[in-house]
Image (tube, rainbow, N blue to C red; front, top):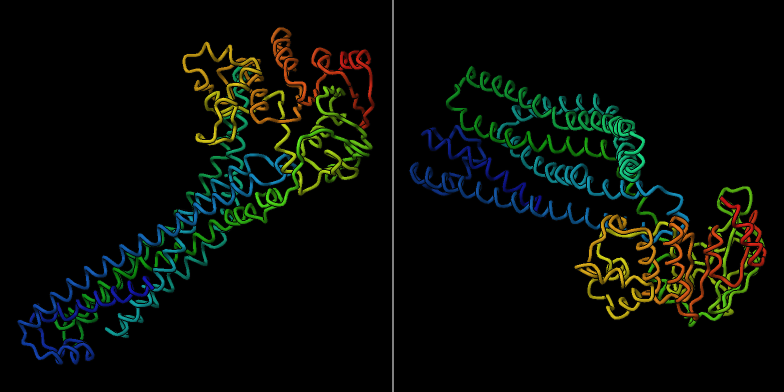
Length: 563
């Protein structure tokens, strides 16, 4: 509706130029188009009054047209960036609710690239398309107005402009389509290369391989730069060609009118209106072309964004409303559990049978690739068995109860994820500022033997630890991981090589903190270190996807030779 109103306003502002110039120049009524002359005669005003009235009408229509266009710009920008916000949030929401296997199968750079593309689409696609739609409607009103002023001149100009843009579209279509693929791929590649370089900066500094990673980034960035340069040039360049040809066309029309019977002076109002109309029309036509070019440039990016907005899985909040309550975890039982990864020729684990009672400490050892991590994912509820059952308190774990189960488990890996935030924020990871329970947080820090270190810091629990805990030692990072699990009130704690990267003294300190934990907490220790497995009272050895229970002496002997 606002676009239509803007079209009428533009039409009125251009139409008001003809009577204004006619009366201002003292020309006769017959120099006006017949429909304008008949309309003006109906008021019965003298020449002076008509000149004043025409001036007021011109000013009023110009002000109204400007205000309507300003409102249209405000509305269109609010719509475009609001849509970009909604899409970005939906992409992130969808990614966060993807099942764990899909996260494991995809590079994080793909998710980041999709988020960047969604933001880029606001300026590179949505805005040009919205402007093209609005400009197209307004241009139709202007074309109608120009036809009413002078059919022959308007048709000549319209056909000329149409042929120019048709030639441009035909010439650039294939180039823009090819560059669209290049840009979409390059965006994902540049984030991936940047992540790899920054993530491995320690090794890069030690190995002096800076130039290798910089060369990779330059290669990706160069392809992106060339494609984007070409795209934007082809999107904006035709305007200047059309403007130059428009001036030539205007000069030819003026010359033709001056050689006509009435001379140039009598045709001046019409010529001025046509010039003003063309001046308003050219940017509108350019916007329509730019909108078409934007769809060609950004279609691959749009396809990636649409794909990332695929249907959500059952990893959603709605599942929480129908999830059965598990209650206090008294027993965990695995019955004939098997798991095969999609596309794998053999099962990662097969026929696992295991009974775990509340408060037990169970150690799991095995060589790399034996199936330890797969078994851990099944116990944590990150995967569901492809055969067999995981039974909690006598109830099989399934897609409805899995979210409830995840609330009761915690995981401390070898490389725990730490945000660039405070110690408190990392312990209460995922909780908002108003949701942190400080008494429980301090208790978790104390039980993990972290409080002694924290008390030495000037800002205590509010101390920022840097990206991925860069300002902490390995032992301090692991204690934060344990404190996070305790703050969660988890009933099953899985330690996945949690002390494997620590020196012997620090490992013993962390192990001492683990030994002191509440005996009602069930703990599973996955490690190749006998010292870590000594925390346990039962042991499993995983080999070729098969599990068997062994004694402490055997697990120590086997773990001692695992690399």
